[in-house]
Image (tube, rainbow, N blue to C red):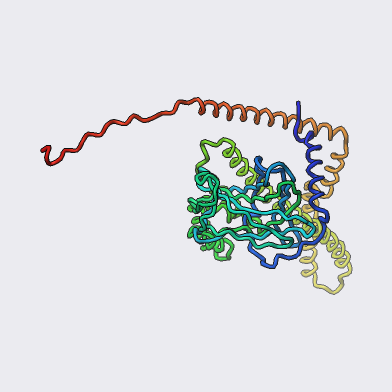
Length: 429
């Protein structure tokens, strides 16, 4: 049976060639963004729209800075579209702002636009196109201007954004056509509405040192629900363990709340559920990695402490034998200390012997990866898992197609209107 993970190698190689073509000098330092915006939606989960040109996206970091790298590939369509699913309320009188870096070797910079999908119906609103130049570009789109195109306007730029307080998706549109290249996106934000401002204040309390204020903020954020998700996903990138765990706990509570999913768009519904799972999985990996690093660090401390205990015990025994003028009572107390130290050091050594050594585990994994027999077994397991997943996806696609056909053949129900009785007039009386 065809298996994706191993058979995707030629396709991935093709994409890698395109990426290398887009990055003629990939190791060059990107100059600092002079605006220094706060982190925004670029740090969240993104996906590629299948109806546009091909592309890819990845987290980009340089020293202590982070951004979203968008890789766009030449194609038959006019643009590459990158989607971020969210729950967001924006100020109707505000703006959508972000910064875009175009590499200096990009001879023909693309143009860029933004689109908002609002409400559970995911009503599409697309902006006009903005030109880009080499280097950093400050981009802003007024949300109140009646120059967005929608299906209602027959795709003319004559509408405002409906239900701006219920944004469900944000798309970045890179109009590249036949061009291949890459961009960096930094500080993607919308002016918050009243709820958004309240969430920002609660998140500030959540990051503070006041325990009572933190507990109150947690309760309030859970009550607000899904509109708080965007901010919580941003602060989970903290380097503080308690913030990661606290944000993760709140995310799980809010995600467990009932959600209105699109009923007439099975593909979008699947995409939402997929992104939710990716966010949960990413957050779970982040927590596990953070705790695992802490465990490894404590193990290293314990190993160092055990060695110090053994060294001190050896020195102490020699010094004890040399004591001539110390009082017997003090010598006896010191001997008891050495006995305790020996007992604890032995127990610590025995405990450490039962703990896996991270370096030994790493070497073991590397050896397993270099073992042809084990690699073949892993490949078979991967193929088996991929085959099962492919079968599930095929069944889902067949169900979606069957639902579509059933809805297409379903007769339109036209309500029967009863004639209204004429009202009695004064003459009739």
